[in-house]
Structure formats: structure tokens, C-alpha cells
Amino acid sequence: MSALADQVVCITGAGRGLGAALARAFDAAGARLVLASRTAGEIDELCGACRDAISVQTDVRVPDEVRALIDAAVGEFGRLDVMINNAGVAVYGPVNSYTPTEIDAIIDTNVKGTIYGCQAAFAVMKAQRSGFIVNIGSITGTLHLANESVYGASKWAVRGYTGVLWQEARESGVRVCHVAPGGIDTPFWKTQEFLPFPEKFDPERDFLNPDELASTVVELVSTSSGYCPSEIVVQPVLF
Image (cartoon, rainbow, N blue to C red; front, top):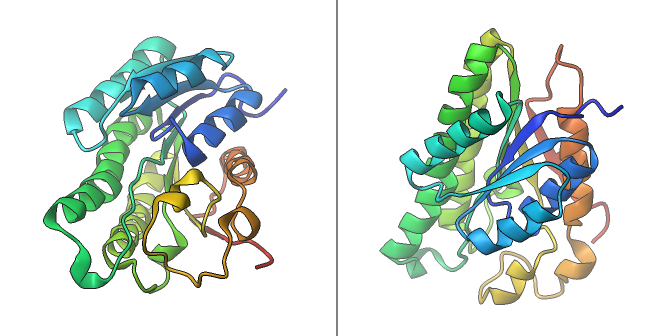
């Protein structure tokens, strides 16, 4: 039997890309899922394809909606074992090109949304004295890359917050990890005017496969409760 059989896993940003891949991977491992996204149709369809799942339309920028998401998880399944803060947005461009609307969207979703998710999940896990919080960051949170000033700043913030949360949460038996992947092959890249890498890069050829990355997160969460990798940086081997 899988170590994750019947574990309750909540995933934000589950409607597409890595979030959807995470849902499929944890479903295959036997977990019970709580899928969150701002777009209800996407998670409703994904939920229907899973063994045991509920969907909760959630805007992670709104604290009350994030708390309602965690309340729904506990109300449906009685506990919360894994929280994956995956929801995020990115806009790329020169430093002076970012509009106030774009800056707010990036910071509110990537930074505040992650913090709200951690706070709501940790309140439950602290009382349980068990749980695992995974914050999906980016390799951009460890580097300085052109055309990623605001997005990079948001991911540096996620990394810093996660490190402090780990220091505080471990006393309650709650594990915390920052996962920092390189570029992931999703349709997102086809919509970007400015890219933080040379034009010779092809996302379909050179970037991480979302299903393989999702499997890595499943393996991470399946590790012994006696220890915790606090940060994992994941990059493709070949470019």
C-alpha cells in the first residue's frame, strides 16, 4: 500500500500545468484530494477523473477564501495531511515595463497567496501535530535573471518565508519544504512576449516535464516523518 493512501492533500492552482499534474500524481498514489483554482470548470473536470476528490473554487489572494478552502478539506475528510501552495502567476519584461496592476497580481498571488495558504494549513496541522507543507517556488528565487525582476522578487520572498516557517513548524511535527524548479513545459510559455532565456531554448525540449516533477513531489511527501529536505532545486539535466 502507498505511503500516501488516504492521505488528504490540498493543491492550489490545480486547474492546469503543474497543479493538474500534481493532482494526477497524488491521485495515482491513493491520496484523497482537495483541488483549488480560481476557475471552477477546470478543477471540476479534474476532480471527476480522480478516485476521491472535491473541488473548491478559490482565489488565493483572498484570505477568507483560503481559510474556507482548508475548512472544506477538514469538513470533508476530517484532517489535512499535505498542503501544496502551487498557485502562481508570472509576467516577464524589463524592469520598467511592469504596470502597477501586474505588480499587484504577482505579489498578491505568489507571495500573499502562499502565506495565506501556509497560515490556514499550519493552524490545522499544528493542532494535529503532523502534516507537510510544500511551497512551489522557482529557481528564479535562487538566481537573478533578466526580465524576471518582479516575478523573481516574489519567488525570493516565497523562499524566505518558507525557510522561517520550517524553523517554527518543526516544533509541532509539521514538515515544510521549498521546491524550486527550473522552467516547466506548459502552454504558459507560448503566451510570453519576453523570456528570461535565449531564443534557442525550446520549452518542449529543454524544460522539466510537469508529470515527472509531480512524481518528485510525491516522493518528497512520502519520505519518513523523522526528517525533511527543507529545499529542493530541480533542473533539467540537458539543454
